[in-house]
Image 1 (tube, rainbow, N blue to C red):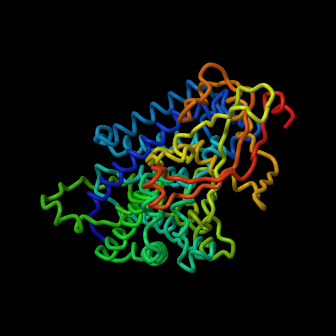
Image 2 (image 1 turned 90 degrees about the vertical axis):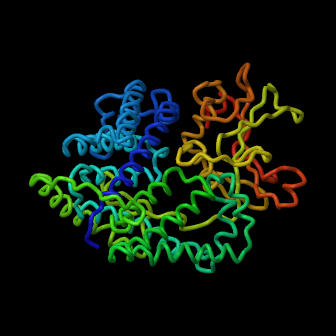
Image 3 (image 1 turned 180 degrees about the vertical axis):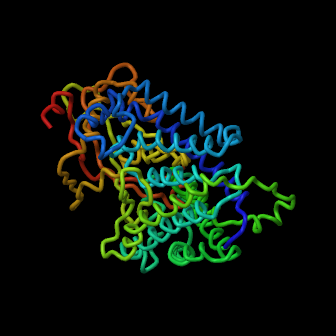
Length: 482
């Protein structure tokens, strides 16, 4: 296991810096519309209701959309500098400070991001960024942060494997991939092709996934060659997930973590030139690393015990700093894809002949002729929450039963009725360019991928059938009464 990790450290830090750049770009483009002063879930209201110790954030000092934009631009600038190797040439404490600034800035965003920032990969990015601060790129590499990153990768992979094994039966009978590519949150251009692979390939894919997530993680702590083989399997698995769907930066971050398992001896056949010797670590830095190791051991007790829990927690944070958490994904796989389609009309009286026009989202399925786009590692937050909406309803005999609506969704409908241009910027199209609609409704449709014959004949990627109303027609007056 022992050895030098100069190249793997460099690759990991460059990849992580790129992902931080994307994360701050996503916040710059979407945060004000979703969570800003006039957003769907405004931060000023959240700060008044939630005490600082429950959600530490710089925005408790003050919040404005301009300040948020300044933090995002600063974060993007630091990330770009670290990615290009321009900001890690100084003393170790300077580079450590820059990574901690990125972590603190993004922590401030995530802790006030509410449901729009409730995804597991937010905590993963924060945890990886915090420990990246102690890699010391201009010093002789230490095994301590390398092992901490491998421990994080171990928790990500084993947590995902166990939650599947304990969850949906289709993971145990090897049939989950019969449905997954069609029903996943955000399909991409290749998802249709993955869905139509032979059943034997799908069953092999489930078995391979289980091996990679349940067996391979234990090899990460073995001697260099075995660790590299196990990390390579993890990388290959993640690349398949990248090719078949849009999961924000989850898969790319897992790939970056996997490089912590490669020692320089593994890279030597590909990089025959000798690696320059880095200066030794100063005593104060060694002391910090020993303290970091001890703190990580203490923080690791709850997530380690979680592996053995009867009700395993998934994507759970044990502290408000998003360090050493429990991870996992897809403990259950839906077999039907219901989509909420938002429509508006200019008709003042809702007669049967009223013309309804659809709003289309950038990533989630809508128009059956539109091939799903590739967005990851960029994260379309509104599209993802729209995918979650059908989980709060029940369909019986093609009847839709709902029990209330999320506050963000009602405010989203309100802003569409008001013709808010900032919300329109989050959508693919606005069918009401001259003036907003008089009424809005949300219909439930059942979506399926077309067969190869259907796609060849019609050019359509999807086929759909109407199920019922998720939200009956409403105007601004109706919304005030809901």
